[in-house]
Length: 134
Image (cartoon, rainbow, N blue to C red):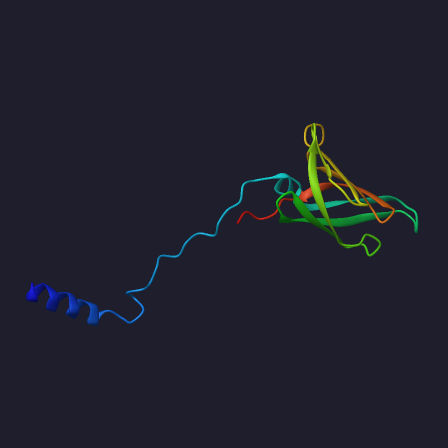
């Protein structure tokens, strides 16, 4: 018994100070894929109509997942402000669940096409890049 105690103490003292408490790194928690994951990505398209200005070509929209079924939409065109939109599914479409902004992605007929109306500007475009996998 004394021999075991001395052996264990010798081993413990020979370890670096933090080694006794070190844990293996854990992977980041993953979330269940939802509507926000399906819509997230980068899209290029055109502003077809704008109540406060003329149409505009080559407008890039970036859609980022911010939470369960919620996305943030940013644009490289100043007339389309950054907005956060909750999403819902209605049959084969993913739509804005509430608020003044309108978004539509038809998951069957045109799964990489996004249509938006934000601040009286209507934009339509196609996905050019999906978000990087984490």
